[in-house]
Amino acid sequence: MAAHGSAFPVAKLALNNSVPPILMASLRMGLVLIILIPFWRFKIPEKKYISPLIIFSISMGVFVYVFMNLSLYYSTIISPIIVGSQLAIPFGILASALMLGENINKKKWFLIFTAFVGILIIFYDPQLRDNFLGLLFAGLMALFFGLAQVYSRQLKSLDTSLLNASVGIFGFTILLITSYFIEGNTLLNIKNINLGSWILILYQAIIVSLCAHLLMFYLYKFYTVGQIFPFYSLFPIFGIILTFLIFGEVPTILFILGGIIVITSVILLHKIK
Image (cartoon, rainbow, N blue to C red; front, side, top):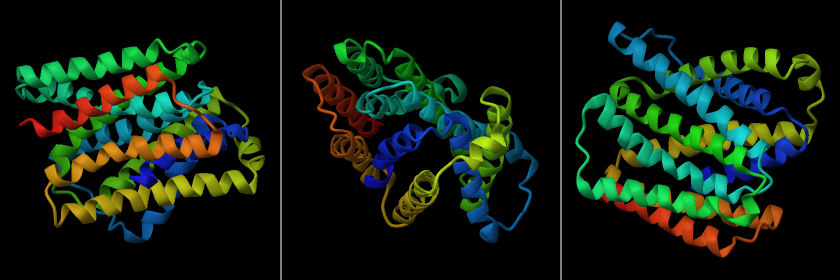
């Protein structure tokens, strides 16, 4: 969770070094793909998995990472973005209900409502006056993360390396093309990335995208999802602490109140069957 939480301030450091946000997301996915190539058996999955695998890969590898970077790029403060990412859980539950017909009881509806109320409280923080676009992108990041989790349920039988490699292929290719047409001067931008920024991008690819996820998959072999998931509430806490240490951000009363409501709602959502 410390690794997951560190993704946001580390990405902001790279963006502050003038690395274009879409290009940075593409390079992160490209590095993940290169590292995974020796472990991927290049086995094409069965036809029934193709469609959900493509949608999962685009949602996770393209939209989640590009909206994460755009939210940080258009925000001067990071902590609300970290808390906003927690909306992935209620978005995932809503997507499951709409797409898979899963039932949402009254308790879950109440907690989904309170999670959005918490975000609304943060939204009225005076410090966010010039950061509304960043919060919008953070909401889109959470939406596509929740959508990706729904499709991941249909891919449980596939090898983990295949899933990560697929995310890397779609993420790297689509984002690189998008960066070329939107940000322009792709080769020049890559050439201008300094060593410090490359280290930050490598950290995101290796520590966050690979190691943190592999550690979670390892834990799932010995513990249930119900035992592990409450620890996800630590990821925004670690992220906010690192944001304070790196950027000196001091949370306001409204942010603390809204953050507590959002994180508590998310924890309780996972305890209700």
